[in-house]
Length: 148
Image 1 (cartoon, rainbow, N blue to C red):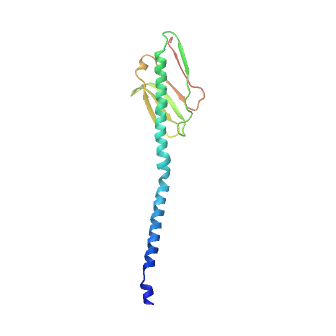
Image 2: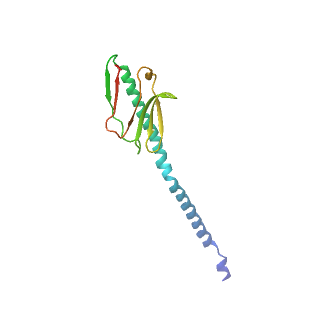
Image 3: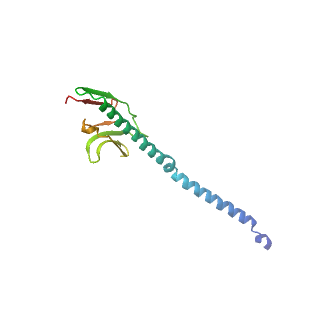
C-alpha cells in the first residue's frame, strides 16, 4: 500500500493540466478586457483624425478655389456636401480669421470634443472668412459678395 501513494506520475500530469489551463484562462481574460480598446477605440480615433483632416483640407481647397475665381464686383455662392458623421460622431466646422494661430478652419467633434485645425494660406487678408456649420445640417453653402 505504501508503494501506491509513492507514485506521483498522475499528480504531475494533473498539476500540469491545471496550471496550463489557468495560464490560458488568465491570458484570455486579459485580452478580452482590453480588446475593445485595442481593436475598436484606437483604430476609430485614427480614422476620425484622418477623415476630419480630409474634410478640413477639402474646405480649405474650396475656399482657395473661390478666391481664384473671385470677381472684382460680384457674388459667388457654392454648395458643398460633407459627410454627416465622422466615425460615429457629428462635428462642427468653424472658420475663424481672428484666431491666435492665424487663419484656420477648425473641425470639432460634437461628442468627444476632438479638434483638427487646418490652415488657410493667406486668403483671409483678401476676403473675410468667418462662419460655422454643423455636419448634421442639410444645406451647406459658402457665399462671398465682393461688393460689400
